[in-house]
Amino acid sequence: MDVNEFLSQPLVARLATNGPEVRPVWFIWEDGAFWWLTGSYSRLEQLLTEDSRVALVIDTCDLSAGAVFSVTCQGVAEVVPLDRAKAVRKLTRYLGPEDLWPVRFSAPLDDPATKMVRFAPDRPPRLHDRSW
Image 1 (cartoon, rainbow, N blue to C red):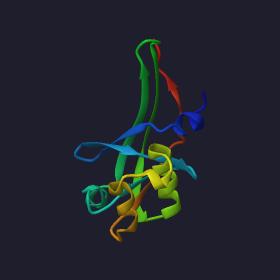
Image 2: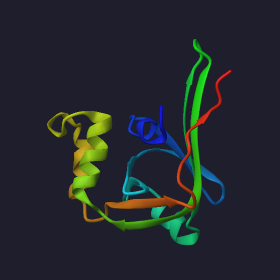
Image 3: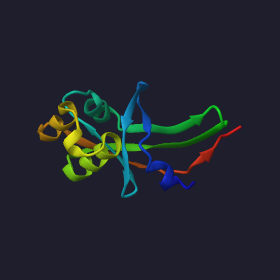
Image 4: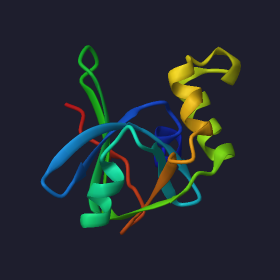
């Protein structure tokens, strides 16, 4: 499996901001960057304003097969205006077709406070096989 195939799966990433503070995020990997949503429901924009350095880990673990794969990245994240089409692509990969989404996921796309975080890692992501 290559890194782009791995990152195209609907996996949960764990984002660490300075503090450290760690949170799960749903993401999309496009244009050489990870993208996810933030808004008035989160302190993430404030945390990134204070210190934009982050680390991101995406991993899988299949205990029955002993298969462990991971991608770890570091760099600077920036809060950018909402790209609705990109946000819909991201949410669709986790929730399926837009008309089936619960309101709590679709409503923020119409909230002017909703933005996106763009994280282009310092180095291109590499998939690590940590299987045993």
